[in-house]
Image (tube, rainbow, N blue to C red):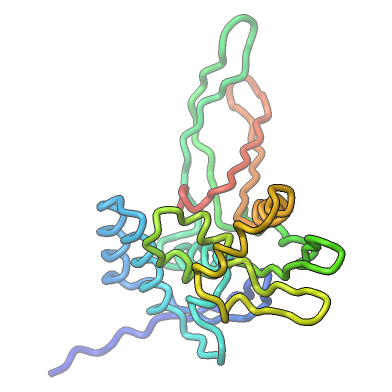
Length: 236
């Protein structure tokens, strides 16, 4: 006799930038095991592949043109964080040591700070996606997609910048980067001046990211601390 299948709850989430509404289920034991094995190996590529597989398994939304590979990196992280919250719990207790100076000494009081997925926000994307390089030439930018993490090139940050390039344009027409080889794109980048390249880098540096801000008081000296994390995924 076949054992009955256990029904699992489903949840909905609106992605903060694309505004796509997705439906997903929580992790199962087999998926939690996959994540734990990848984390134990401490290989970033294995961890990335495990996250991708788990999100693919749990994502129930079927929408044309939408997939894990086409999602922006920050929305992928945000979705995974919320999946984890529904699967394992959205709260974690983080140990914190008060470094406030009281008199001539550090307070040193050690206490627990409760953190929650609800404390995590996504910073806004760049206000413009068109960068003028000259009076007639420029480039249209886009958010990097999760597929970039599949690269085996050790210079992954450079690959991420390339993935932000949507199209170049001049006075006559537009030239989509997707129609160019990686070598041709690199050659184009290397033809820029340092100042022009810096414009691309500045745009890349302003990409949205997960952020957590938390205020809390030390129970011993009463000093109010403010925690600001740019990588809250590491706490969950």
